[in-house]
Image 1 (cartoon, rainbow, N blue to C red):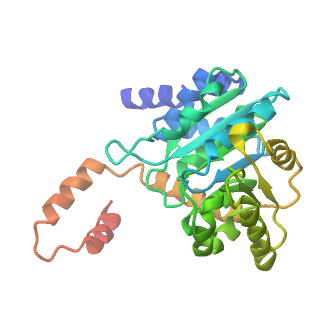
Image 2: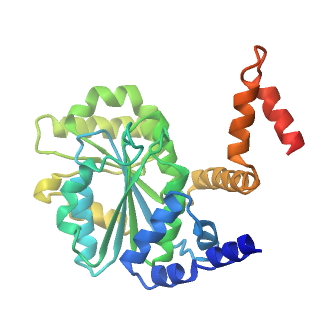
Length: 309
């Protein structure tokens, strides 16, 4: 009885969180995102209760390390803030090999936004996701969509074949490159074509930038439909306005990749609910005992465990 009462109290404790999120309280929003990211109750009840505003655009920004993604994001955010818009930034950072948290390396470049009441910045670790996007990223975006921002920006690590997940997550995906990326493009252009709705050649004041941008346009023309290529110098604010104008254009194409990512998300949610009744401690003890046998087979063990649980 006591356990049932505690569970009831826990599952209904999401109401203040829900209210705070909808009111745009950043402290409560931070608390809610922490619960969701770490699967701490009442996160599941909270996710079911929030009013997710799916019309809020999500912009994915990806590219190789050193391309200036964070500086570019900072300038894009400035454009929106100057129009009195609210922006949320979800920065997907590499996972620390020691504590499995995010390394937070690029947040320094967004320091000027920390105290801006219209900007919310949150870092999240990749948690081993190859594409730089974990299932938790999707859930955290849903929470941010309930907080009624005007724009959500997701900045991810890396670029390549495994980064296609961002294309399913975002309404528009921007791939940021630098003039020195020429050789790299030849190796990963198939993945890039899968990802991008727009390319940005950042640090365009470097030698060879014009030639690189022209070659990129030619490659795009040969491979797929027309994709815009913008040249920017983010740290000098050059070319940002043109990119901003493209971002605010209405989305005229449905993201077909999103349905596959949503199906994967639904599958993981179903798995989560089905595993709630499994006693992990008892499972570990049973495996420790069974593993002592010379003919131990984990697949047979799992099959037997499922039948008898």
